[in-house]
Length: 216
Image 1: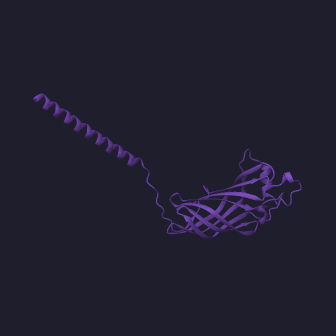
Image 2: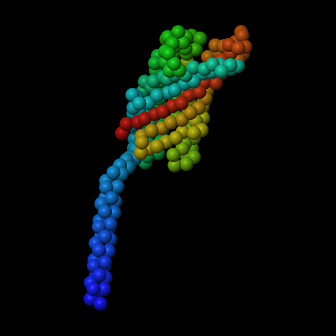
Image 3: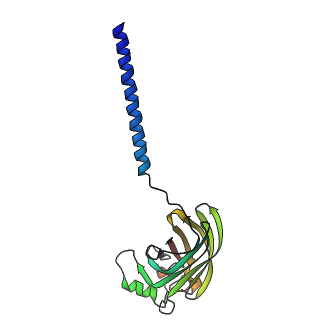
């Protein structure tokens, strides 16, 4: 009988010690896990904030109308800022340096870039800047806006609607994709109505993808 009681006491002590060690191990793991979780950056956006010119970029893409050929590349911002009130965007304006046009679809083509810069396309010697200015805002959800803006290219200003503007205040980032009709800005080279050979026609639509980072 004594042996049975001693055995039961020994088993109870072992079980208690095992549970205690397991609890300590779990507590230590929980502590490590908490320490490894990066601190979430909180948004505190107020007033006028300049964009980060080194990180922000405009990506462009143009394609043939009746074939599968296309070209794409980038163009850099020259200046830009966003106006905030309680972390919400209230205004914004941007200037793009048209002299920074490059193609990134393969080997760099100086001939292509020079053609994009001459009077057939953007005539950057005469019109070195393009501009985008926000006009009105509609909140779609917490991280998406619909924005109307004035886009100026070659001194022609047109209203464009940016239907999906993704806005991440904690990341200080804004991005959107949209298309423009280049003929509305007087860029008619080999467009559908001007191409002498159908197979050489270039699509009137130019795809733009904008990625804006702003400092704080």
